[in-house]
Image (cartoon, rainbow, N blue to C red; front, side, top):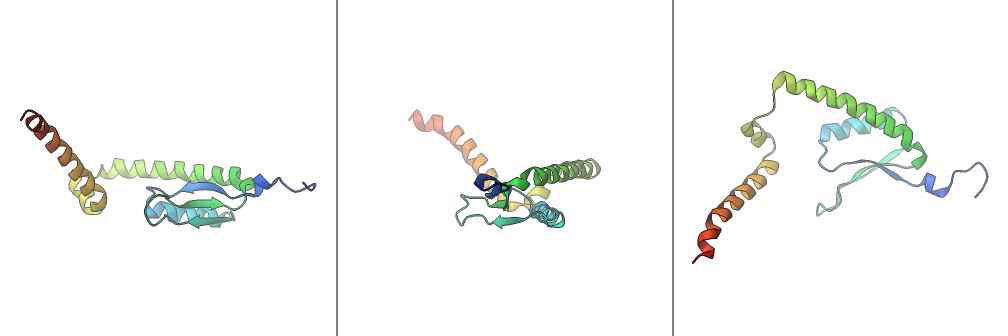
Length: 128
């Protein structure tokens, strides 16, 4: 290793912010935050079959501490902002959530109905 140069592992890319289940507005805000503060980052997109979630990566692992501090401050401010919005407007109801995110609600609702139907029908099927 040459003097004055960080070890190789300190220069490797490091995952800062996984994008699984992250709302697009939050991901956009984090991208803007990193860019505004001059953090050298890049993004990987989710895989085609949903196995990998994608994420925001730091090109230089040595910048992780500072980027993590910025991200922690941002997430604390966002958490307070969202809590205040919930206090003002209340939690979204079932129909509002169904209207906003049908791809999230419908599969879960169908799974619950299937489980309940199976639990009700299984004793009769087994006792035949």
